[in-house]
Amino acid sequence: MKDGHVEVSDVAVKVDANGNPDWIVTNPDGERYAVPHDKFIKKYELEVGEDGKHAPIGGPIQAVQVFEDVSFDVPWGENGAPVEMTIKAGGYLNVTNIRDIYGIQEEEFNNTYALCNKNGVFKDEELRKAFGQKVASEQDQEAE
Image 1 (cartoon, one colour):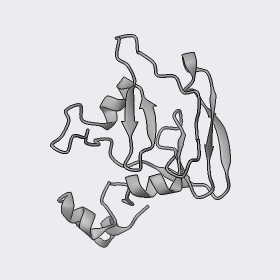
Image 2 (cartoon, one colour):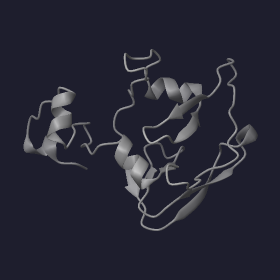
Image 3 (cartoon, rainbow, N blue to C red):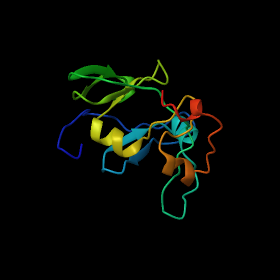
């Protein structure tokens, strides 16, 4: 991580049955991680935008903040072997898919995600304007 914390080591970059290798994603703060091809195409545009980046298309995520350091196994090692992931207090667990829970450190989370409601309407007015979101009611403004 940007602060030197290592949340996962010994991650294997894999190739799927169709010959598609994992994608290496770099977040705004420089965090790098491998994403399987089938998951990448559900979360990002394949074509590179004018900014040289793949635009996200995944929609809202559900995340839970943790208030103490937590460690747990994720299946990202060689041949799906478990490797330990460590998230520091203040970080988040992405629980959108209960079969694919992973952690995001607090600073990286805050620099990558923005609060929205369950319908994907941003809480922040500037973001709503930037993405052309209209607010139909006060309920649309509430973050969940």
